[in-house]
Length: 109
Ligand SMILES: [Zn+2]
Image (cartoon, rainbow, N blue to C red; front, side, top):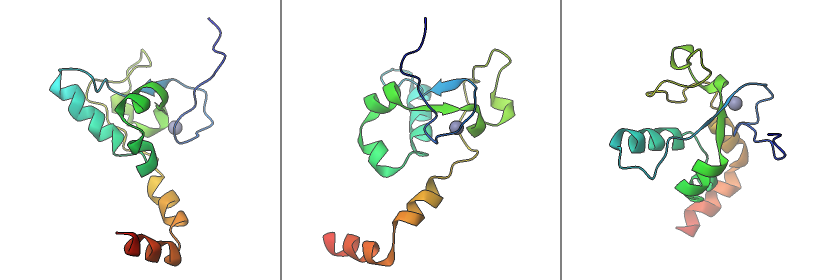
């Protein structure tokens, strides 16, 4: 089945590899829920606010963000896999926050 709308890694990586869906947040499996929140923590604020369903349906992460020990030969991830590598969220957020923007945030509270 040809993929018309090709999903990209959330971090925009230009690699041709498997993309990994978030753990299912709508499960009764506590481990999966816990893992979902750990994955979610690597996303920026506005993306997190779009909600768990949006994240589960639309956000994918590529292999670059997972230790090799989390990657199985089947191109899937181990059950305890958590993204820990190449998470440039912090850099991006810092770039957006100029001193004046921070002042605006303070008065807005
Ligand atoms: Zn990536």
